Image (tube, rainbow, N blue to C red):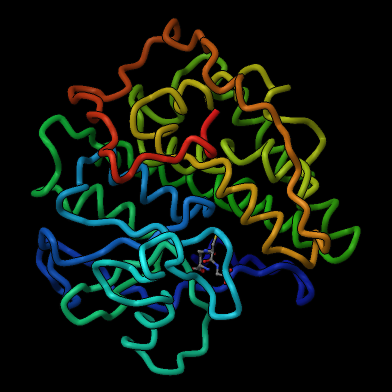
Length: 336
Ligand SMILES: N[C@@H](CCC(=O)N[C@@H](CS)C(=O)NCC(=O)O)C(=O)O
Protein backbone atom coordinates (compact mmCIF):
# COMPACT_ATOMS: atom_id res chain seq x y z
CA UNK A 1 0.00 0.00 0.00
CA UNK A 2 2.95 2.26 -0.33
CA UNK A 3 1.36 4.16 -3.20
CA UNK A 4 -1.34 5.40 -0.87
CA UNK A 5 1.16 6.79 1.55
CA UNK A 6 2.74 9.49 -0.58
CA UNK A 7 3.96 12.31 1.59
CA UNK A 8 0.97 14.64 1.79
CA UNK A 9 2.11 16.46 4.91
CA UNK A 10 1.40 15.49 8.44
CA UNK A 11 -2.12 16.86 8.70
CA UNK A 12 -3.36 15.13 5.62
CA UNK A 13 -5.47 12.00 5.36
CA UNK A 14 -3.22 8.99 5.35
CA UNK A 15 -4.55 5.49 4.85
CA UNK A 16 -3.07 3.04 7.31
CA UNK A 17 -1.05 0.14 5.96
CA UNK A 18 -2.62 -3.28 6.12
CA UNK A 19 -1.25 -4.94 9.21
CA UNK A 20 -1.92 -8.58 8.41
CA UNK A 21 -0.40 -9.21 5.04
CA UNK A 22 -0.06 -13.01 5.04
CA UNK A 23 -0.98 -14.51 1.72
CA UNK A 24 -3.09 -17.54 0.97
CA UNK A 25 -1.21 -19.24 -1.83
CA UNK A 26 -1.26 -22.43 -3.89
CA UNK A 27 2.02 -23.54 -2.28
CA UNK A 28 1.06 -22.35 1.21
CA UNK A 29 4.39 -20.60 1.76
CA UNK A 30 2.99 -18.28 4.46
CA UNK A 31 1.36 -21.24 6.21
CA UNK A 32 -2.00 -20.66 4.54
CA UNK A 33 -2.53 -22.99 1.58
CA UNK A 34 -5.45 -22.49 -0.79
CA UNK A 35 -8.06 -24.99 0.36
CA UNK A 36 -11.76 -25.22 -0.47
CA UNK A 37 -14.00 -24.53 2.53
CA UNK A 38 -11.21 -23.50 4.89
CA UNK A 39 -11.49 -19.69 4.84
CA UNK A 40 -14.26 -17.15 5.24
CA UNK A 41 -14.26 -13.81 3.46
CA UNK A 42 -15.76 -11.10 5.67
CA UNK A 43 -16.99 -8.05 3.78
CA UNK A 44 -19.13 -4.98 4.01
CA UNK A 45 -21.14 -4.20 0.91
CA UNK A 46 -20.58 -0.54 1.76
CA UNK A 47 -16.81 -0.76 1.45
CA UNK A 48 -15.14 -0.22 -1.92
CA UNK A 49 -12.06 -2.24 -0.95
CA UNK A 50 -14.14 -5.18 0.20
CA UNK A 51 -16.36 -4.92 -2.87
CA UNK A 52 -13.40 -5.68 -5.10
CA UNK A 53 -13.17 -9.08 -3.44
CA UNK A 54 -16.92 -9.71 -3.70
CA UNK A 55 -16.85 -9.05 -7.44
CA UNK A 56 -13.71 -11.15 -8.03
CA UNK A 57 -15.16 -14.05 -6.06
CA UNK A 58 -18.32 -13.99 -8.21
CA UNK A 59 -16.52 -13.62 -11.53
CA UNK A 60 -14.14 -16.44 -10.65
CA UNK A 61 -16.87 -18.71 -9.27
CA UNK A 62 -15.26 -19.13 -5.87
CA UNK A 63 -18.54 -19.13 -3.91
CA UNK A 64 -18.27 -22.81 -2.94
CA UNK A 65 -14.58 -22.63 -2.12
CA UNK A 66 -14.59 -19.39 -0.14
CA UNK A 67 -17.70 -18.62 1.91
CA UNK A 68 -18.69 -15.04 2.56
CA UNK A 69 -20.01 -13.12 5.56
CA UNK A 70 -21.68 -9.73 5.17
CA UNK A 71 -21.41 -7.33 8.12
CA UNK A 72 -23.86 -4.66 9.19
CA UNK A 73 -23.03 -1.46 7.27
CA UNK A 74 -23.06 0.50 10.51
CA UNK A 75 -20.15 -0.11 12.87
CA UNK A 76 -20.49 0.51 16.58
CA UNK A 77 -17.69 1.26 19.03
CA UNK A 78 -16.52 -2.35 18.63
CA UNK A 79 -16.38 -1.89 14.85
CA UNK A 80 -17.85 -4.33 12.32
CA UNK A 81 -20.59 -6.61 13.65
CA UNK A 82 -22.66 -9.54 12.45
CA UNK A 83 -26.03 -8.04 13.33
CA UNK A 84 -27.55 -9.08 9.99
CA UNK A 85 -27.31 -12.74 11.07
CA UNK A 86 -29.62 -14.69 13.37
CA UNK A 87 -28.63 -14.10 17.00
CA UNK A 88 -26.24 -11.36 15.81
CA UNK A 89 -23.57 -14.02 15.21
CA UNK A 90 -21.79 -15.12 12.10
CA UNK A 91 -23.16 -18.65 11.60
CA UNK A 92 -19.83 -20.12 10.48
CA UNK A 93 -17.33 -18.34 12.74
CA UNK A 94 -19.69 -18.11 15.70
CA UNK A 95 -18.53 -14.60 16.56
CA UNK A 96 -20.44 -11.35 17.06
CA UNK A 97 -17.71 -8.89 16.09
CA UNK A 98 -15.03 -9.12 13.43
CA UNK A 99 -12.60 -7.88 16.09
CA UNK A 100 -12.82 -11.32 17.71
CA UNK A 101 -11.03 -12.82 14.72
CA UNK A 102 -8.40 -10.07 14.90
CA UNK A 103 -7.95 -10.76 18.63
CA UNK A 104 -7.64 -14.49 17.98
CA UNK A 105 -4.75 -13.70 15.66
CA UNK A 106 -3.02 -11.01 17.73
CA UNK A 107 -4.36 -9.92 21.08
CA UNK A 108 -4.32 -6.16 21.50
CA UNK A 109 -2.80 -5.31 18.15
CA UNK A 110 -2.70 -1.56 17.56
CA UNK A 111 -4.40 -1.12 14.16
CA UNK A 112 -8.07 -0.78 13.32
CA UNK A 113 -10.45 -3.59 12.41
CA UNK A 114 -11.06 -3.44 8.69
CA UNK A 115 -12.81 -5.25 5.89
CA UNK A 116 -12.18 -7.09 3.70
CA UNK A 117 -10.82 -9.73 6.07
CA UNK A 118 -10.15 -13.39 5.43
CA UNK A 119 -10.52 -15.63 8.46
CA UNK A 120 -9.26 -19.19 8.91
CA UNK A 121 -12.42 -21.08 9.92
CA UNK A 122 -10.82 -23.90 11.96
CA UNK A 123 -8.77 -21.57 14.20
CA UNK A 124 -11.01 -18.50 14.00
CA UNK A 125 -7.91 -16.39 13.28
CA UNK A 126 -7.67 -13.51 10.86
CA UNK A 127 -5.33 -14.41 8.00
CA UNK A 128 -5.21 -11.19 6.01
CA UNK A 129 -6.80 -7.76 5.65
CA UNK A 130 -4.52 -6.79 2.78
CA UNK A 131 -7.14 -5.80 0.22
CA UNK A 132 -4.59 -4.82 -2.43
CA UNK A 133 -3.09 -8.31 -2.59
CA UNK A 134 -6.24 -10.27 -1.83
CA UNK A 135 -7.94 -9.95 -5.20
CA UNK A 136 -4.72 -10.54 -7.13
CA UNK A 137 -4.32 -13.77 -5.16
CA UNK A 138 -7.92 -14.83 -5.83
CA UNK A 139 -7.17 -14.34 -9.54
CA UNK A 140 -3.85 -16.16 -9.61
CA UNK A 141 -3.25 -18.37 -6.55
CA UNK A 142 -6.79 -19.76 -6.32
CA UNK A 143 -6.98 -20.82 -9.97
CA UNK A 144 -7.32 -24.55 -9.17
CA UNK A 145 -10.68 -23.73 -7.59
CA UNK A 146 -11.98 -21.33 -10.26
CA UNK A 147 -15.19 -22.24 -12.09
CA UNK A 148 -15.06 -23.50 -15.67
CA UNK A 149 -15.06 -20.44 -17.90
CA UNK A 150 -13.65 -18.08 -15.26
CA UNK A 151 -12.02 -15.02 -16.85
CA UNK A 152 -8.33 -14.25 -16.40
CA UNK A 153 -8.53 -11.09 -14.29
CA UNK A 154 -4.75 -10.51 -14.12
CA UNK A 155 -3.35 -11.75 -17.45
CA UNK A 156 0.39 -12.11 -17.31
CA UNK A 157 1.06 -10.28 -20.55
CA UNK A 158 -0.87 -7.22 -19.36
CA UNK A 159 0.43 -6.97 -15.81
CA UNK A 160 2.88 -4.09 -16.28
CA UNK A 161 0.27 -1.94 -17.96
CA UNK A 162 -2.38 -2.97 -15.45
CA UNK A 163 -0.12 -2.18 -12.50
CA UNK A 164 0.52 1.33 -13.87
CA UNK A 165 -3.16 2.00 -14.48
CA UNK A 166 -4.22 0.57 -11.11
CA UNK A 167 -1.60 2.63 -9.26
CA UNK A 168 -2.88 5.87 -10.79
CA UNK A 169 -6.49 4.87 -10.19
CA UNK A 170 -5.70 3.99 -6.60
CA UNK A 171 -3.86 7.18 -5.72
CA UNK A 172 -6.06 9.72 -7.50
CA UNK A 173 -9.47 8.05 -7.60
CA UNK A 174 -9.99 5.14 -5.16
CA UNK A 175 -8.10 6.87 -2.37
CA UNK A 176 -8.37 10.38 -3.82
CA UNK A 177 -12.06 10.62 -2.95
CA UNK A 178 -11.20 9.75 0.66
CA UNK A 179 -8.48 12.40 0.76
CA UNK A 180 -10.99 14.96 -0.47
CA UNK A 181 -13.74 13.76 1.83
CA UNK A 182 -11.68 13.68 5.00
CA UNK A 183 -9.67 16.84 4.27
CA UNK A 184 -9.58 19.17 7.22
CA UNK A 185 -8.33 22.26 5.46
CA UNK A 186 -9.17 24.02 2.23
CA UNK A 187 -5.85 23.53 0.50
CA UNK A 188 -5.81 19.82 1.16
CA UNK A 189 -9.36 19.45 -0.13
CA UNK A 190 -8.68 21.59 -3.21
CA UNK A 191 -5.66 19.48 -4.12
CA UNK A 192 -7.34 16.13 -3.62
CA UNK A 193 -10.56 17.08 -5.40
CA UNK A 194 -8.62 18.51 -8.34
CA UNK A 195 -6.60 15.31 -8.64
CA UNK A 196 -9.76 13.17 -8.56
CA UNK A 197 -11.28 15.02 -11.50
CA UNK A 198 -8.05 15.42 -13.45
CA UNK A 199 -7.61 11.64 -13.32
CA UNK A 200 -11.25 10.97 -14.16
CA UNK A 201 -10.89 13.18 -17.22
CA UNK A 202 -7.89 11.18 -18.40
CA UNK A 203 -9.68 7.92 -17.76
CA UNK A 204 -12.67 9.21 -19.68
CA UNK A 205 -10.41 10.00 -22.65
CA UNK A 206 -8.84 6.55 -22.42
CA UNK A 207 -12.22 4.83 -22.33
CA UNK A 208 -13.80 6.84 -25.15
CA UNK A 209 -12.58 4.45 -27.83
CA UNK A 210 -11.98 1.25 -25.86
CA UNK A 211 -14.45 -0.77 -23.87
CA UNK A 212 -12.17 -1.77 -20.99
CA UNK A 213 -9.22 -0.16 -19.24
CA UNK A 214 -6.52 -2.64 -20.29
CA UNK A 215 -6.76 -5.19 -23.10
CA UNK A 216 -10.17 -6.02 -24.56
CA UNK A 217 -11.64 -7.98 -21.66
CA UNK A 218 -12.65 -7.27 -18.07
CA UNK A 219 -9.67 -7.26 -15.73
CA UNK A 220 -8.88 -6.39 -12.14
CA UNK A 221 -8.24 -2.82 -13.34
CA UNK A 222 -11.91 -2.45 -14.30
CA UNK A 223 -13.05 -3.93 -10.98
CA UNK A 224 -10.98 -1.34 -9.10
CA UNK A 225 -12.28 1.62 -11.07
CA UNK A 226 -15.86 0.33 -10.93
CA UNK A 227 -16.01 0.14 -7.14
CA UNK A 228 -15.34 3.88 -6.91
CA UNK A 229 -17.52 4.91 -9.87
CA UNK A 230 -20.53 3.00 -8.60
CA UNK A 231 -20.34 4.94 -5.30
CA UNK A 232 -19.62 8.28 -6.91
CA UNK A 233 -22.99 9.99 -7.14
CA UNK A 234 -24.41 8.17 -4.12
CA UNK A 235 -21.74 9.22 -1.62
CA UNK A 236 -18.58 10.76 -3.05
CA UNK A 237 -20.30 13.62 -4.89
CA UNK A 238 -22.21 14.85 -1.83
CA UNK A 239 -20.73 13.41 1.34
CA UNK A 240 -17.08 13.60 0.16
CA UNK A 241 -17.60 16.89 -1.74
CA UNK A 242 -16.23 15.52 -5.02
CA UNK A 243 -18.81 17.63 -6.79
CA UNK A 244 -17.20 19.28 -9.77
CA UNK A 245 -19.57 17.05 -11.69
CA UNK A 246 -21.51 13.84 -11.26
CA UNK A 247 -20.65 10.53 -12.83
CA UNK A 248 -23.88 10.83 -14.82
CA UNK A 249 -22.54 14.06 -16.36
CA UNK A 250 -19.53 12.34 -17.96
CA UNK A 251 -21.06 10.43 -20.89
CA UNK A 252 -18.08 8.09 -21.35
CA UNK A 253 -17.52 7.11 -17.71
CA UNK A 254 -21.24 6.87 -17.06
CA UNK A 255 -21.70 4.46 -19.98
CA UNK A 256 -18.59 2.50 -18.94
CA UNK A 257 -19.88 2.19 -15.36
CA UNK A 258 -23.34 1.11 -16.55
CA UNK A 259 -21.80 -1.46 -18.89
CA UNK A 260 -19.94 -3.02 -15.96
CA UNK A 261 -22.92 -2.66 -13.62
CA UNK A 262 -25.01 -4.67 -16.07
CA UNK A 263 -22.33 -7.34 -16.46
CA UNK A 264 -23.05 -10.40 -14.28
CA UNK A 265 -20.79 -10.30 -11.21
CA UNK A 266 -20.66 -6.49 -10.91
CA UNK A 267 -24.02 -4.78 -10.33
CA UNK A 268 -25.51 -7.85 -8.69
CA UNK A 269 -23.06 -7.38 -5.78
CA UNK A 270 -23.83 -3.69 -5.18
CA UNK A 271 -26.04 -2.58 -2.29
CA UNK A 272 -26.75 1.17 -2.56
CA UNK A 273 -28.63 1.08 0.73
CA UNK A 274 -25.61 -0.25 2.63
CA UNK A 275 -23.35 2.19 0.81
CA UNK A 276 -25.40 5.27 1.66
CA UNK A 277 -26.18 4.34 5.24
CA UNK A 278 -22.55 3.48 6.00
CA UNK A 279 -21.00 6.66 4.66
CA UNK A 280 -23.65 9.11 5.87
CA UNK A 281 -24.26 7.53 9.27
CA UNK A 282 -20.78 6.39 10.27
CA UNK A 283 -18.69 9.43 9.31
CA UNK A 284 -20.35 11.78 11.76
CA UNK A 285 -17.27 14.00 11.72
CA UNK A 286 -18.35 15.16 8.26
CA UNK A 287 -22.10 14.52 8.54
CA UNK A 288 -22.95 15.22 12.20
CA UNK A 289 -26.72 14.78 11.77
CA UNK A 290 -26.23 11.32 10.24
CA UNK A 291 -29.16 12.10 7.95
CA UNK A 292 -29.07 9.94 4.81
CA UNK A 293 -30.17 11.65 1.58
CA UNK A 294 -32.99 10.12 -0.46
CA UNK A 295 -31.25 10.44 -3.83
CA UNK A 296 -29.82 9.96 -6.26
CA UNK A 297 -32.36 8.24 -8.50
CA UNK A 298 -30.85 4.83 -9.33
CA UNK A 299 -33.01 4.04 -12.34
CA UNK A 300 -30.32 5.10 -14.81
CA UNK A 301 -28.04 2.18 -13.90
CA UNK A 302 -30.23 -0.19 -15.89
CA UNK A 303 -30.51 1.91 -19.05
CA UNK A 304 -28.77 0.88 -22.32
CA UNK A 305 -25.10 1.93 -22.46
CA UNK A 306 -24.22 1.31 -26.10
CA UNK A 307 -20.67 0.23 -25.27
CA UNK A 308 -20.99 -3.09 -27.19
CA UNK A 309 -20.19 -1.15 -30.34
CA UNK A 310 -16.64 -0.58 -29.09
CA UNK A 311 -16.02 -4.33 -29.39
CA UNK A 312 -14.24 -6.11 -26.59
CA UNK A 313 -15.08 -9.52 -25.21
CA UNK A 314 -16.11 -9.11 -21.57
CA UNK A 315 -15.06 -12.60 -20.49
CA UNK A 316 -12.45 -13.27 -23.17
CA UNK A 317 -12.49 -16.99 -23.93
CA UNK A 318 -14.52 -17.58 -20.77
CA UNK A 319 -18.17 -17.17 -19.85
CA UNK A 320 -20.20 -14.97 -17.49
CA UNK A 321 -20.94 -16.29 -14.02
CA UNK A 322 -24.36 -17.82 -13.34
CA UNK A 323 -27.03 -16.18 -11.22
CA UNK A 324 -26.30 -14.99 -7.68
CA UNK A 325 -27.20 -17.68 -5.17
CA UNK A 326 -30.36 -16.92 -3.25
CA UNK A 327 -28.68 -16.39 0.13
CA UNK A 328 -26.26 -13.85 -1.36
CA UNK A 329 -28.77 -11.73 -3.24
CA UNK A 330 -28.70 -8.02 -2.53
CA UNK A 331 -31.99 -7.03 -0.85
CA UNK A 332 -34.43 -4.97 -2.93
CA UNK A 333 -33.75 -1.88 -0.80
CA UNK A 334 -30.21 -1.75 -2.17
CA UNK A 335 -31.02 -2.14 -5.84
CA UNK A 336 -32.28 0.28 -8.52
N1 LIG B 1 -7.92 0.11 6.30
C1 LIG B 1 -7.69 -0.98 5.41
C2 LIG B 1 -8.33 -0.76 4.07
C3 LIG B 1 -9.71 -1.21 4.01
C4 LIG B 1 -10.58 -0.20 4.67
O1 LIG B 1 -10.20 0.93 4.87
N2 LIG B 1 -11.79 -0.65 4.99
C5 LIG B 1 -12.68 0.20 5.73
C6 LIG B 1 -14.08 0.14 5.23
S1 LIG B 1 -14.27 0.89 3.64
C7 LIG B 1 -12.67 -0.27 7.15
O2 LIG B 1 -12.96 -1.40 7.45
N3 LIG B 1 -12.33 0.66 8.04
C8 LIG B 1 -12.26 0.36 9.42
C9 LIG B 1 -13.04 1.34 10.20
O3 LIG B 1 -13.67 2.22 9.62
O4 LIG B 1 -13.07 1.20 11.42
C10 LIG B 1 -6.23 -1.15 5.22
O5 LIG B 1 -5.52 -0.17 5.38
O6 LIG B 1 -5.83 -2.25 4.87
